[in-house]
Image (cartoon, rainbow over all chains, first blue to last red; front, side, top):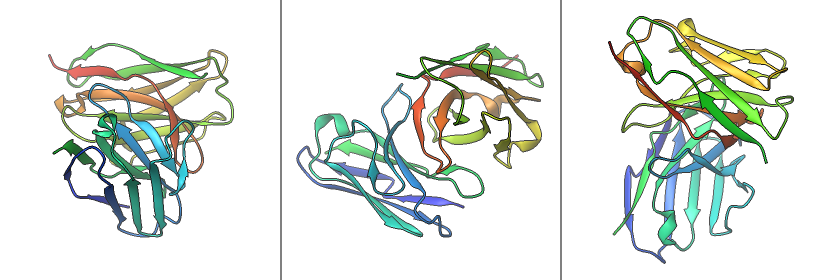
Length: 105
Length: 117
């Protein structure tokens, strides 16, 4: 299953709302996760099973979707949110999307 | 709090075998999937494979013929062997704890492996 993330790069200012998309080439049910990665760091789990926030993740992060279309929303961007975001599914084997870079405008 | 730490050579010669170990501390290796993921310089994440604590494995079809993942529950460790490496295998290699849903909630810091003569 191929995951396609859009946009590739998103330029926004702190305080704005970010909407990141992940589309699967076929249904993944509800088994989709989102990760945040900052330079030189390991990815951090944000959302699992499409809409559940992982432990310690702020409420400004939310996930939605099912089947083939998923969205990660950051309601009001904080300076520390500028990073690369990946979606991931686990069908027959695990695949990641190519990533969305969220940069400061 | 569970922590993962990758270890192994930082430099491997072409055609040789890349061997890495991930040590699980402050937690049990039982009841989880233990994953290997890699990230070539400047690129995205690629899942290599995983092993369930009982020993069953699954791996990326693109790497399957070269990948062996094993677990040593007595040492709370799991390992990756990747054979016949080329420069394309140069990457940061991460280990991570996973669940049946596929999510991976605890990651090691990553270790850089360069394939070069």
